[in-house]
Every structure is written in C-alpha cells, then in structure tokens.
Length: 326
Image (cartoon, rainbow, N blue to C red):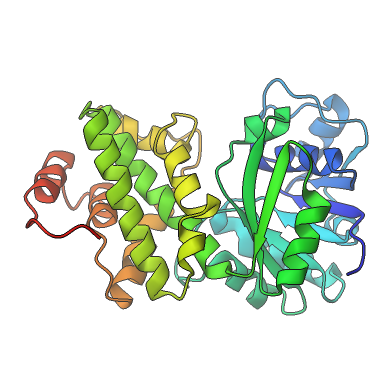
C-alpha cells in the first residue's frame, strides 16, 4: 500500500480543526482547507479557530482555501456537515488524482437522495476511494489529545487498515473494517436517538427512563443495520453502541443538547448544527422502505416536524403493547 504522508482536511469547523491536529500528531503533513477565504485568512494569521476555543494550531499545519492544492494530498478528510458534503467533494473532484482516498467525517444521510456519505463521495468523485470515519468522539477531546477510539471503514479492508495506520496515534486509536454500511448507519441513527435521550433528560424523566431509552434505541439501530446488510459486531462496536452511549449521555453532544432544549420547552439552539435534526426524517423513510420498526426514532421525527407534542409522543411510547425483549 502506498505511503500516506500528506493529509488535507476540507472544512475548518471544530471537528475539521481537531482532525488537522490529530493528523499532525500522527506525523503527517497537513493542510487545513476552510470553505471560504476570510476564514482561511483569519485562522492562518491568528493560528486560532474561534469554533474550537482554547486551541492554537500547530505551526506546521498549512491553512489555505486553495482547494486545488488541498487535492494534492494523499488522504482527503471531508469534515463539513453531512448536508454540505456533496458540494465539498464536487469542488474537490476536478483536482483529485485517481484512487485518492476521500474519507467522510460527518454522520448523516443526504436529504433528497437518501444516500449515505460514502455513496455521495462515490457519485460526486467516481475515481476516488470512499471511506467513512465514525465513533464516539468530541472535537475538543480529540484536539487536546485525550484518549479516543473510533472506527474507519472502507470497501477494501487493506485500505481501511492502511488509513487507520496513517491517522492513528497513541491518543487516537483507529479500528478498521470493511463494513461501511454498518458504520454509516450507526453514526446516522445515533444522532436521532441522542435527541430522544436529550428530551428525556430535559423532561427529567429519570435515569431509569434514560437507560431504557438508550437500550431500546440501540435495538432500533441494530434492526435497521441488519436490514441494510450491516454486521452485528459493527452495530455493537464503537461506531454503533459506543457512539450511542456517548451521545445519549453528554450535553457536549449537539443532538443531546437539542433534545434537552426541546424537553425543557426552550427554543431550538441555532448556533450549533445538530445533524440528527436533518437525519431524522430520512432515517424514518429508510426504515419504512426496509419494513423496520423504529418507534423511538419515529417519535423524534414527529416531534421535530410538529406532527406531535413531546408529551403525546411519550404517552404513545409508554402505551405500546408489551412484547418480548429483542
């Protein structure tokens, strides 16, 4: 496998900046490519990204908005929100060398097309080698070098392993797999379920309800994953159960924070993007097409689109017929 010495990160939000820092710690030459020139100039001049407070960029991270120069890297990490991934890859494609690995670092499903992130990459950049990075992680922890473990998936397990070796470090452990769909479903579904967990916390339903909601939500994630051909070990791994536990228990999760605000009767926070808000209706459409029962996710989607109130959704879930575990 060819060496991967140069890494480009497209998107300079908190997550993109953290990824640039971890790639530098892994010994790679790194380009951080914001999506507009003003942001690039500001970060290059100050070495600080206001979206990731308390961190100064390492001196050897090259900051530029020149997408053509970023495309020359050996590995491309796309750190834009899920709904912006297609635009980022489309801008990159004319400058991209054949067979360059392009790794999606967002967790979601594209609105309108119902495509997962690697499918969007494959369609927008047919000559690229799509991969997906997902798992329990917060940008602040990764940027600070705190211990983190995630999953990287690519169609060819050898490529996934090589990318994991190139990006991993003692504080950032990467497990690799060829189960792309399992990793993508875990990442997308947990964002929706984290909103449900946040609502329960905001409503002060108690720790018992929180535990029940998380485990029943995991059951939904597993059912959908199996229907879409994912492997059980992936669903029970870092990008499935691990990510679900983290995002269903921490206010650092934007999806959990959104749910808490809703549960308290507050306005939705608009300063930070919660991917689950966009993913919920698409996830339900996918589940319906696969004939998979996802009552918790359905309740979240109905609450978000105003089809039901939180109290009515809770009552509906609590009065469902008793059934066997599974």
